[in-house]
Length: 240
Image (cartoon, rainbow, N blue to C red; front, side, top):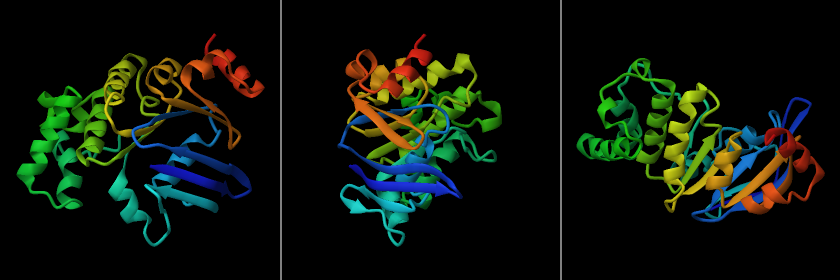
């Protein structure tokens, strides 16, 4: 579903991504971990066409993400959940969720609301349909953001550190929703610092450092028997 070939990205003189190659199979749950500043968020933003690589190519379902077609392709395949919830403050939870199905997918209001209530049930927040973001906790806002992404019914879900902006006591309620979603057939790419969560949901884990894909493997192999010294050093600090 996703393939990167030789992707490079710089901001000024800072090289953020250095010759990245990887792929994500349909239905696979890929988790990307690494220290802050390693290029994880930039990588996922290149997949979603929020950043344009300086070199290399991104493919979605075998189609190249070219400048002329990237908006159409991303809307056809991807939905993204950001670090910040990015909900429209003047809209209720229900209105935030139905906006894309109505405006972009041309669904009727009734059909969009039926879809929205279904995914409000999925994230456990049907009773918050008429609430505005200012009346929701951070964890609830992020769960609404997940419902909004699900309502587009795209084949790929991208998560960019979805719990990093939450108070510690709200983290698990969001992780629980993503854990339930990981049992579905949706293709998922998740950038996270939550190691227990990564071990639980990932089919495969990628470790990045300094813009380089350092190591990848299945969770049990990755956490128990890392092959790269940099990976071992990172895990020894995180898992103490």
